[in-house]
Image (cartoon, rainbow, N blue to C red; front, side, top):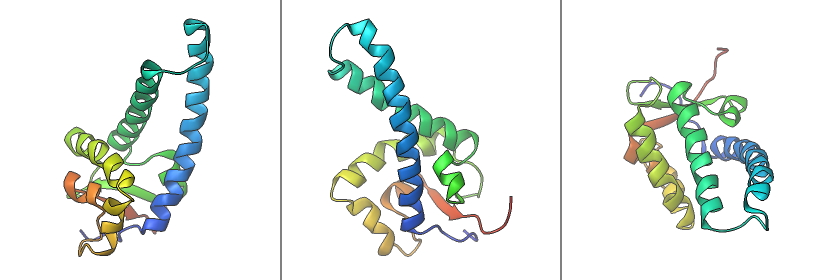
Length: 137
C-alpha cells in the first residue's frame, strides 16, 4: 500500500462526526416510531432498527464512495488492498468486526499501534486500509 495510512486520531474524529449524523437519523426514527408504537420508544425491535440503520449507512457510504461524511471532513478514505473502494465482502467483515474491537476496551483499534501495516484489527480482518488524502481531490 503506497498511500499514507490515516492515524487513529483522524479516524476517531471522523467517527465522532458520523455519530452526530447517526444521532440525527436515530432521533428522526424515534419520532416516526412513537406514533406506530403508541408509547415510550424502547425495546429490542427499535434497537434492531437503529443498529440496521447504522450498518446500512456505513455500508452504503463505504461501498459507494469509500468514505462517510465524517471521513470526508477529516480527509480520509477506506480502500481495499488495490486502492479502490471496498467490496461488499470487505464491508461486511469490517461491520462485523468493528463493534467487538471497540467494545473489548478498544483493543482491536489499539492494534493499530503494534501492527506493522498500521491497520486496526477490523482493517486487517477485512483487508482494507484507512488512508489520508493529502492532495486536493
